[in-house]
Structures are given as structure tokens and as C-alpha cells.
Amino acid sequence: MNKALFYRIAIIACVILLLWIALQMVLGIVSERSEYRDAAERSIWQSYAGPQTLTGPIIVVPYKEVIAVAGVLPPQFREESRQLLVFPKTLQMRAEMMPGERYRGIHKTIVYEAASQWSGTIALPDLTSTEDLRKSVDHVRFEMGQPYVVLGVGDMRGLISQPVLYLDGKPIALQQGTRLDTLPQGLHARVDTGGAAGKPLESRIVPFQLTLSVLGARSMSMAPIGDQNQFTMHSKWPHPSFDGDFLPRQRTVKDDGFAAEWSVTAFNTRVRDQLAGAPGAGQTAALQAPSVTLMEPVDIYVKAQRAVKYGLLFVLLTFAGLYLFEIVKALRIHPVQYLLAGLALALFFLLLVSLSEHLPFLFAYLSASAACIGLLGFYLTFVLRSWRRGAGFALLLIALYGALYGLLVSEDSALALGSLLLFVMLACIMTITRKVDWYTVGDQPQQVELLSPAKETI
Image 1 (cartoon, rainbow, N blue to C red):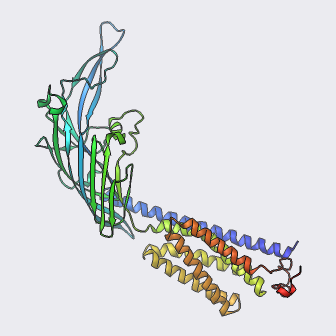
Image 2: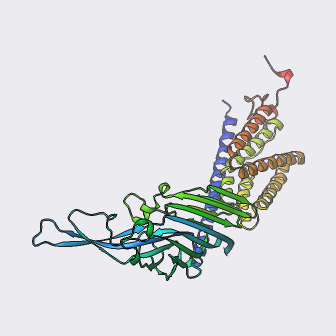
């Protein structure tokens, strides 16, 4: 066993371990900066408004059920308070999102002003009919309360002006609060349903119109509470993310903005059960709703994290290149020189994060890679004892950094490109070292040489 080779590999492995620790520290810094960005964004939301979820209108009928207490004489009664929710038959919404930006230090978040027009139909409740109400055992009677209409607004601080609601052609004055546990923020107003008493369902269906303008940040959702829901949204922001629980049926994304349309029925969602507080409906979770998020075109911290995860591969490939020079050119490179070269590689990722907070990601990447390649090229000129070798190694680093950038911008094909890069690198190493006598590697430098075809034995 070649002890010199074994000790040398062990020392280089220790150097790699130290550099891996350094890369983990850089990765921690990236995560910390990302958390600072998120905290700055939440701070902006506290002073502006956060993501919005718009819900409504819903007619709420509070009532009490009087129940006889079994087995008690004289007869005693208890009351249970409940609510009946009446949802729209049809619901249409058209919204225009006007995007903007707000800054907190060097960090920013995308905000918007949304002007929406709501329309549809809803059935006024018949307070004289209790056929749809659930009766308990020992039921005695129902006592109906005063119906009111509810509008849900995710963050009331974003309400720009007094919403205008017309029900059956009559304006309704809205007040703050929803009086509905499952809808924490919003508005409500009393509804006169006296004219619906004793009428069939078809004649109790009336139209409604609503004008609602809100401020919000990052995302906007629309709760599909109607039997049939049609949502349309336009914006000048060219980087939308259609998320939530429903994708749009039609969408158009261009450089000057986007347009999207959703069509959702009551059979597609459990949002009604969530609002009614039905067991197992997930009423504590976010409402099932279509949603649009105004995305940043480049998330610098996500790309920086992905880059750092390739850092150890950079170190291994660079050290492999240096070790090949040792073998092929009979050089002796000290472990300290390996360490300094590795630290320059690790410093690239720290430069990338710091510069990308102030520059576009491409310019930050070019600046950081140029600085590190220039430093390594200069240093390796002396380590490899030739400016030609130093320049050649710098060209290899340029190709390596170019390949890394390709991996960062090609998210869908990153695995294929990374696998191809590793295969090419391995093929190059195997080709260069195909005639190396590894039994002599680690001995005196003059004893290490490439075997020529004439020296090969059969």
C-alpha cells in the first residue's frame, strides 16, 4: 500500500471537510438573509395590508332552537344558538389589480390595489319556513333572529373606501365586523326579508351588486361560495403565480401583464362547509379558493441556496484538477494551497449573496465569478509555476461557473444538465489519467510520469 498517497489523500480530505463547514456557514448566512427579507416583508404588511381573501356576500340567519330537557319534571327547556348561512346562486367577480412596490431597507415586497365588481343572485330566506333547519331530539320550536348580510375581507386595513352593496336594487349600509366566527374580518348589514315570507324559492331569488376596492400585498384570493362562480382578473404585472386550490380555466401571460378566468361550482369545493363550521371541513385552515400571487421574477435567495449546494462539487472538481496537475506535471502542491484555493471558491458564494441584494442577479453572478476566477488565476500562476497553466485553469473555472449558471436558470432541466456535467468531468479525468501508473503516485515527483504507448506492457 502506498502510504504517502494515502496520507496525502487523507490530508486533502480534511481540507475538503473544512471547506464543507465553510460552505454550510455560507448557506446559513443565505437562510438568515432570506429570513430578514421575510421579516421586512411582514413589516411592510403591518403598515400597509397583507394578502387578501375576499368572500361574500352571504346572508346569515341567526336562530335559536328550544329543546326540552328529557326526564325532568316539571318540564324544563334549554336553548341552543345557531346560524343558517344562505349562499349566492350565482357569483361573478371582475377585478383589476394595479401592482406597486414598497421598500423596507434594501428589501421590497409587491403590493397592489384591486378594484373589483361583484354581481350575482341570492335567495332571500323565508323565516316562516323551518324545513331546512336541523332538528334535535326533544325539539320544541325554532326562534328566528334578524338576518344580516356578510362580506369577508382578509385584512380590513386594506379597505380603501366604503363598499357599495345593492340587494334587490336597494342600497345597504354596511358596518364593521362579520359576527361570524369562521370569517374573522369583514362587514355586515341587516337585511329586510319580510317580503320573502311564504313565497316559493324561485320568487325569492334577487340580484345583488357590489363595488369593493382593497389594498393588499403579494396575493389575492376569491372564495367560490356560490352555486356557480365566475372570476375574472387582469393586471399589468407580468409574473403571476396561479396557485390556491383552483387553476384558471383560461389565462394569458404577456410582458405587459396577465388575464385569467376561473369557473368553479359548489360541487368542486368545501368552502361552504368551512364557513359553516362543519366538522371535518378544515375551518381552521385557509379557505379553499382560487388565488393569484404577484411573484418576483428572480428570488435571489432561492438561487443563492441552490448555488451553494453545488459548492462542494466545485471544490471537488477544482481539487481534482489541481491533483491532476500534480500527477501529470510532477508538481508538489501543499495542502495549505489547496485550502486557500478552496476558500476562494467558498468566498464566491458569499459575494454572490451580498452583491445580488444590490444588483440584478446576472450582474451579481458575473461580478462575483470574475473576482474569484481572477484571484484563483493569479494565485495558481505561482502555484503551478506557469502563467500558461494559471490561465488554462482559469479557463476551466470559467466553463465551470458558466455551467453552474446554466443549472441555476434551468430549473426544469437542472438534473439532466448536472448529470451531463459530472459525466463530462469524469470522462475528462479518466482520459487524462488513463496511462498513469497509480502504484508510483505519491512517491518522489520525478518517479511519477505518464506512460507512453511504447512503455505499455501487454
